[in-house]
Image 1: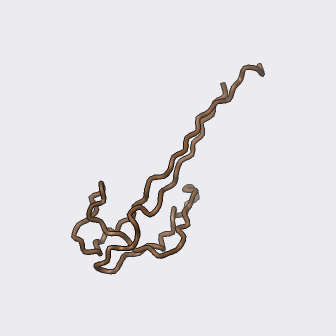
Image 2: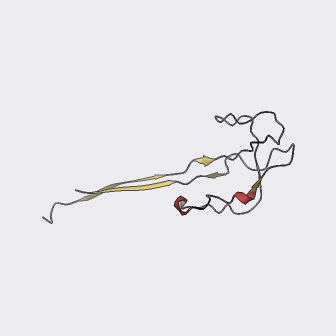
Image 3: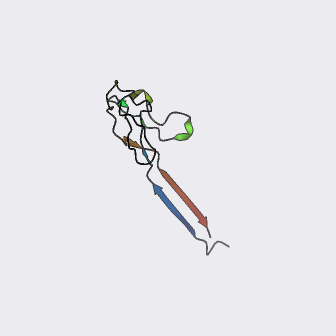
Length: 99
């Protein structure tokens, strides 16, 4: 009864998807909005220097990042945040079996 058993498993890791924050108000005065596919015609937000304080535990009810670092840019300014500023939470899954 105690012989012939084996533990097997599969481990999968994945990085998170890139996060793009856009300015929905067109304060850059470019006259168009993000089309949602390739980012043509979008304005960025302004970002203040400081740590994003990324939250690695999405189940704790806290925001994923510090939103107070972001604000609308001045009228006619494109904004200082880069298009893909950080990546969302990744994935780590373990599937085990006793056979």
